[in-house]
Length: 356
Image (cartoon, rainbow, N blue to C red):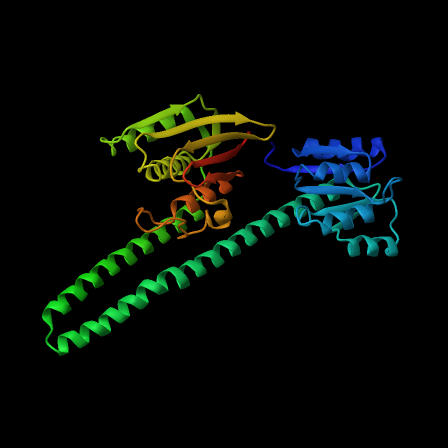
């Protein structure tokens, strides 16, 4: 896909599509076109263009109704819509903006003006998405700090108060025990803070995109992790994997976390079984990492990729950051991660890498 973005043109006059589309193609945009409002809505059910150029007057369904439908749908409401029409009356333009468009271009348009408006609204939309993502991350950090750090700090304060009482009363044995508890709590809190900082660094890192051989990367990560588990019986089944585009450091961290997670939660099995395979669809290379571990209940799925959210008891080591990192890393690469778990049957993670 072009880095310039994808634009959907909706017009029931083929000559207009050819004219408007050729200008965009020449400028480097990826262009899709449909000749009716209903066809546009059907296309949007499975596709997410970066911007829509929409004619107002069409026979099957006028552009105003199409725009209202787009803006009422949660999946498409944030796609910028630019109307283009030969009708330059103030009333029609007013209706266009009321329907939800971000701009209005009168036909016949000037090439430079047309491209400038498209470029401006593409940039505004991308910055809006980036701002919304940053705001979401900020809320998540605020929640993590206020909830997950408040608890151990409150316990530490209580222990300090108790320690003061024991020292005042001369109970040295009890004081020593409390000091040990304080040390353990302070170490755990420091680790939590370090993991939070690591998460912050990864989320703010700018990916350096290059071609990545997932076969070599996965093989290297597996050797590294298996060296740490010399006494376990582990069966690895790794199928041929594709070459993807991404930041090699971040993608390595993603796979290390996924494979480490699979090893950790299958530790109770006599023989740990982990498989890594791939499939492909029109848009993505889909990498599957599957284990035969303890799994999880899908009713808790909404918490799976949250920072410091752990679905299992503290008996299983972990920071609660690994899967959150995986989610943020793949989203920074324009993809996504999904999981299917069954209690006591294992988990399958699917990582979706956009095709180049």
